[in-house]
Length: 265
Image: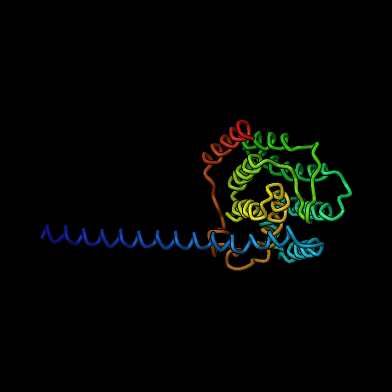
């Protein structure tokens, strides 16, 4: 009798372990597939915006404004806080400035730097208010190391801005930590990698600032119109609703970012 109970328990235990293993495996496959599909979707869009003609300006502006206006009141109140609105407006300003510079080059690249500073400043202010002091310090150093004296370039309709690869990596992990600390969806972090992939495909590291600007807007637009299930809340790991960050990871990540920008940028 006792031996039979042991055998039955062992069988139930093995079945439970097998079921748990299958669940973990399926989740891993599904999540990996979703991330892969995210890059399949976003990389070509960012690439086309980066290299296409002036219609990009009109198209991106119209889509972005239409997306903003299409929010219903409930979603607008719960989702579009002051940071989201300022980020959208700042992104649109960046798109306008970069696209016009690509074709006309009628103003100093310091205009681009100023827009970048405002964009970063919004995130740093939010971090500061909520206690992300190490990440704020990393952001301040990053902006301090942005070149003010070298003019931006436009070659074959590409907007090129002289930022080092180390600076780009520093910005990427800094912005990802900010996004994590405010419980934003995974798409806000993955889109950072999409921009790096596009600049690598173009074999122009200096094209990154343009790809990042277009990527920021595209991610907000796709999220607002719920483009495919990837951008539908709780339908994919990409846009999981009600994310919760670990405060200790946030502090450690910010501290690592501070060390990275001090030592390597």
